[in-house]
Image 1 (spheres, rainbow, N blue to C red):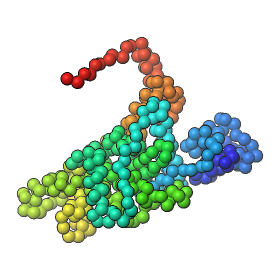
Image 2: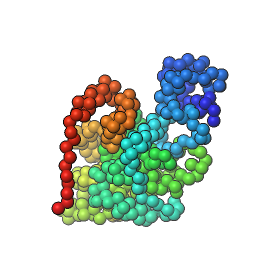
Image 3: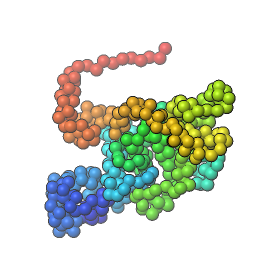
Image 4: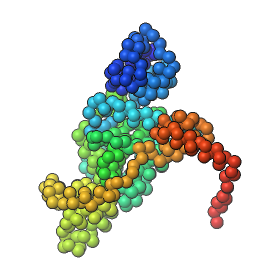
Length: 379
């Protein structure tokens, strides 16, 4: 593709109008139009402004390879045109993360459990087999909700981002360059983020089973079908609440109350697994026959849910960084080793340039001090 074609493709991909691009870049609409028609060529400064607007690198406009965008799978896609900007931001962060890994020569190989066969295998009880496989391979323990995020980031090499959005949703993608990535809504409660994370993990594990037709068709934005979403929900419940651990946690209540549990009891047990009560009720029904879960959940919402939400408000005030801890650590390392400039560090981490310069000055002051070495010899 020629430069003008790539400029037009980049704008189409972002979902922005000529007027919107002009407002964001201070480049006239007529000039942008002429660039896209090959009547004029943009200056380097203009290309940099357009690249920043489209959340792309300048090299994208000069790449000779055909344009191929990763498929992004949404769980409840945000309304357009916001979805286009969110998608572009998500892929930009994935590429930034990959760049940092390459610059620091610190790449975590992707170790997501593999799943072969066909989608039909997940019909009951197929999901439970996959849950057992993943729990064993990732060594998640009896309370995976407290460890799943760190294991996926540090051991499996999954890039996980949290962003603030007005709508409740999550997304994931797999790319041959940057690997697997998940985008979560940081405005949702922690227990919901845990569930969304496990839910998206199912999609990553089964990507080749469900996405191959969409990838081959060149689709960039897709939604999972109802059956796949049901499988993913069942997988998330099973992964976060291992069967034996649930039975062990619930038995003391069953013995004490003569086989009956209150909603407060369910709330106490659900907290152990970092899930909400409604999710725990559904998981409980996977293990024990308890009648209509819809009726039980309705009664819970009518009588106890608001009280439980109020009691956890303070817990939900935790601060969630948009960029993963490893992403930020790599960025600091790249800055310290002069692999990136202060300006690039500011762009990646979202820190004001003034604060970045203070960090640089601090590093320069400490360079003269010897870095003490500590010998760790096994006994």
